[in-house]
Amino acid sequence: MSWRKIELRGDVTRVNEGRVTINLGVPVTVNADTVRLVTPYKPPTRKTPLVDKPT
Image (cartoon, rainbow, N blue to C red):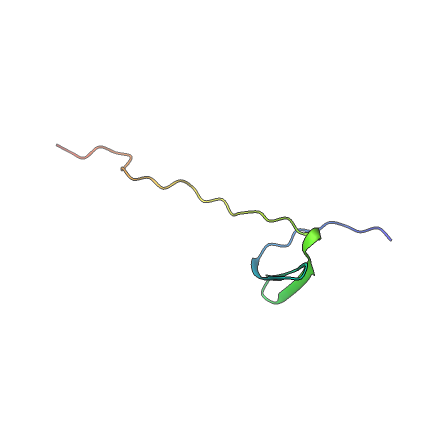
């Protein structure tokens, strides 16, 4: 039997005893050694505006 890799995107809700539970709308539990943690991209925040203030 050949296994295909699939990508599941969701929030991790629980990690215990080598298993990870991911919330995909319904909780899905998989072995921890089969998942890869990816942090979401967050664009940098800008403290100064892009345009100058009128003088």
